Image 1 (cartoon, helix red, strand yellow):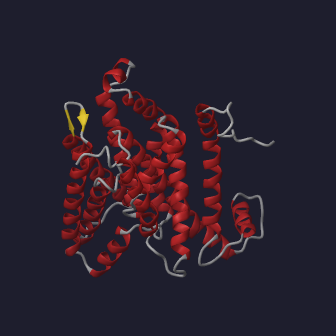
Image 2: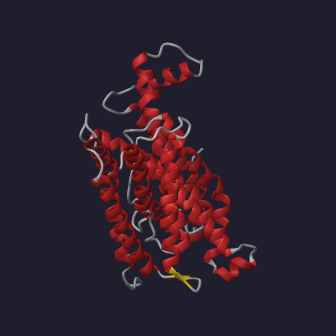
Length: 364
């Protein structure tokens, strides 16, 4: 079956019809893009695994097929798949957090990394890593996988709450105050992080330096299990948050008359954005620009309906981060570039273009 794209020059094809077509096709296209990214991530790397070899390894794990080599099984299940699943959750978490923050502040410049939320999560995570290791504490085995994401969640929650409190007055949020306060919070968090790292040993310092630029290289199934509850919580809340954000776009009074409690809704958005950002930072370190680029691109294509924008952001964010990770593995193979460098190279020009388009309405 051939699907005809409405001709933008045809008199019968209105802007509304074209946008409706894009909305209908967005989720299937993004799911297909994510599926392609997963296949590419599983088969491309320093040690290539053929598609047939990957298929046999998966089939053997499910009891459908035999004949997969030990090398393919080890590479696929112990290295590639944990890394791919981690990339899906980190990319989706950052994109969802960015979309929620942009909807809450009603501005496309809101981004977890840009306004200090990622820095707060990193400060809490580094504090736990260095201080517990320095104290020589023996932690229960069940607690270890969850310690880092929980601490990163609380760090991002503290910064998000403080940022919202500073930027909001009399029910109105100042974009200029938000950006300036975010810069200040990020600088403070980075200074405190540097102070903690200064007292770390050489191994911790080397690990932190690489982690601070973002990497999926340390992904394991244990770490995946540690951050999965936070990302899953955010995904399950998307239908409710999408409707609430749409109501807030009309104004807080209108949202109240539609049956929403604006303050309660804002608190939930803050908590969920902090959970998604904290999980992403705990899983892969500080990765910038995903939270600002993905929602902005989709908003231009699909419109501002958060019921569609939020799940679409999760899918595109996951696919974008996986493709960025593939590039980080290939560009300097057999070594790896930090994935944060790839996302910055892609995201910085987009962010500059947003600033250029909005410079007439930004008053700082």
